[in-house]
Length: 189
Image 1 (tube, one colour):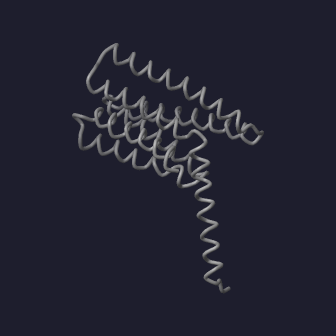
Image 2 (image 1 turned 90 degrees about the horizontal axis):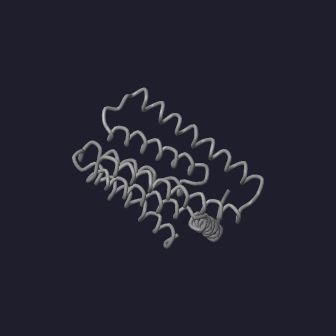
């Protein structure tokens, strides 16, 4: 089968259009908002963990997590109204079940491994979270899942090479990276 240069160029243009349309769809879906919210929660929580302790630290994590969860539910339900269908409803249920089981497996892994400190617990949670993000994105496209790998890599680097500033590292580089990525998706895709 011979393809003319014009046919090849037309095919490449079609691929570029689909890629652009997929990126726009992801950017317009509100995904960037969840990245920014999660990044902000992680930034506030991990910076607090680096410099504070005791009940105030717990209050900060609980408070930011509750506010972030409320925002996620509100934004998700608002975005869900735009995309109502039977298939979407089934997909959302599967996503919820996936995350419930992933949390269960993470808790089980922590219980079995008996981490000796908060940093090890944090790494289990982050690695399972990034695995979940990666797995959720893969059925859609590589474009929507690739970012979980460098985030996990940054967390691992901080854990092994910068233990004394691990939580600072997590707040600024990991939480900050999620915020920057969310803004990049919003404005550049």
